[in-house]
Image 1 (cartoon, rainbow, N blue to C red):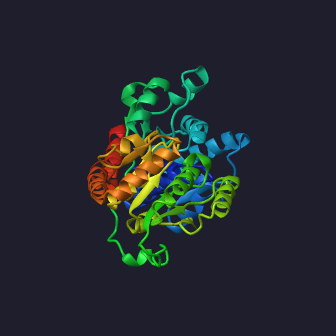
Image 2 (image 1 turned 45 degrees about the vertical axis):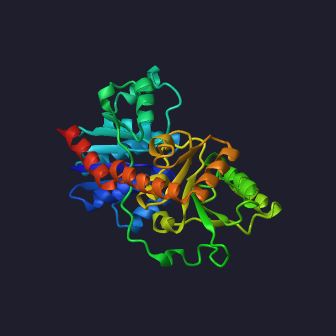
Image 3 (image 1 turned 90 degrees about the horizontal axis):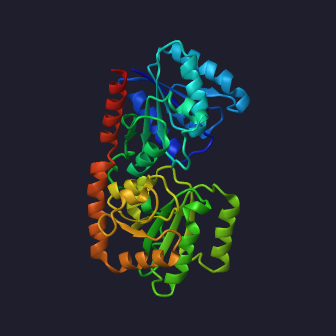
Length: 367
């Protein structure tokens, strides 16, 4: 089986990380694969570093769609590809045209990583979407959205939860130089792993931190992530400076391997206002760390409130502060949430199971 994985996104977020994992899994498995990415993108650099075979398109502008589609079609013929698997919604026209132009019989899979805001049943969208053989969503909520909005039979719409790898044996040395351990009492450390932009909700964490600090000075907050919105990033840093929060609020920048350091923290927090899935939550849960998330999007399918984590009302920093206070004051609850969270994540968000289900989907499609 030969699979062409397509993603011409410039960014590097959850969607692109899933694409990279799929490419790496196929490359190291018994199946052949070829990655198709954008030239000079983060994905090109990361796939090249792993020695994964790829082709990079210099442009994906509207003017380049038809030439790129023809090139992709010829590549699939030369590679004797069986499946074209796309992930990025802006690649739909490219993928469909390439399937039409290809002289081989190609199956097209589209894994949708973002919510579907509008109906796709108008004539224009119907033409493109009906060329998809399997439409995959990463949550049940998104699958139900797709059934309502996508012009495909329900049997062609599948839900496949994103899987995360089992954590490696934790090394205490990973925490050295990371935490404010020289302070007494020992800080209660909360981590936020997310791109720094407003919909990710870092400002809510700062508001909650201000509310809680006078009562609980041992609470410390660690922000990891690239600045997706530089103006927003600067506003957060200004707030830290103006409100004198720097003693217990720490911006650590991007970390290349968040699961490796998650056990350094008592809690991993995801305050996003509209998260399709929230990959960091199952990563933290599989690492045995308690989680708190906003009651929004796919987070509600990951966290069962007061069972496998805590949920707070979207956009409500006061409610977030209450949930942090609850988990801080009740070590038994935190331990229970961490244990039950790990059990759920090991069962539902297991990378090995995920790949087995994906491989079965591929093989069933070809048979």
